[in-house]
Amino acid sequence: MNNIQIDIVSDIACPWCAIGYARLERAMEQLAPEYDFTVQWHAFELNPDHGGEGEPILPALARKYGRSEEEMRSTQNQMMTIAKDLGLNFEKMQERFTCNTFDAHRLVKWAGEQGQQTAMKQALFDAYFGRAENVSDRDVLLGCVEKAGLDSAKAANVLDSDQFAEVVRKDEATYQQAGVSAVPAFIINNKYLISGAQEPDALVQAFQEIAAESE
Image 1 (cartoon, rainbow, N blue to C red):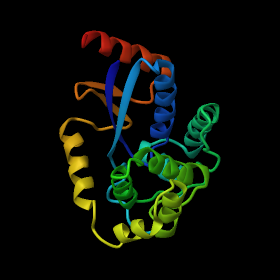
Image 2 (image 1 turned 45 degrees about the vertical axis):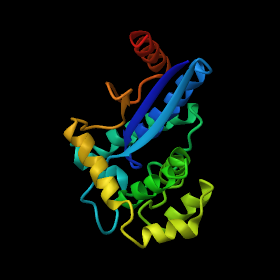
Image 3 (image 1 turned 30 degrees about the horizontal axis):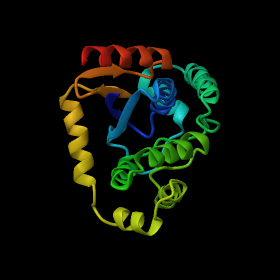
Image 4 (image 1 turned 135 degrees about the vertical axis):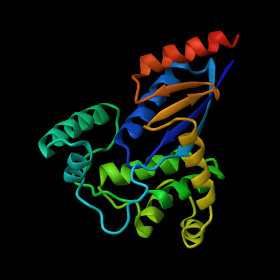
């Protein structure tokens, strides 16, 4: 049995992070049952200073990257096609608004204590890209908690406190200091970095090479 530890640095607001994990799932399925994968999610904020009302995503991205809204719409259309082929719901990704994801990251850490990190992350991706919901909104977050099969009353207690805030900040600082400046980033066995949403076949080859090196 080959044991592979995967630490995923990502943001809920990052579409390539959702696509990257869906591709990772396909790679892991191809390698089962000879490989045993352990996945941990780590926080990264694309807009850490975001506060107040959100801005429509297309003009926000156009300004951020110095491109036209039409160019950004075309890029997003391509992502929507990729996502659909992977079974992801990106139907409303062009209707979403910018938002702060700090509280969402806190809930991912909380869900991790119950072994439901991935379920929580996927519920958040679905809310943001599939339904264009505001994932900084308390009610939206609690709805995602329920979709992940977790206790919304306990999650509300987390949101009403500063629980996991320091954990998220330390997480972000750790990977920034390690040189992670773009997401998704996959750290394999605490040693190898795979950047971006790689195709399943590329991931399979990478995992096989890593396993061969450790034999």
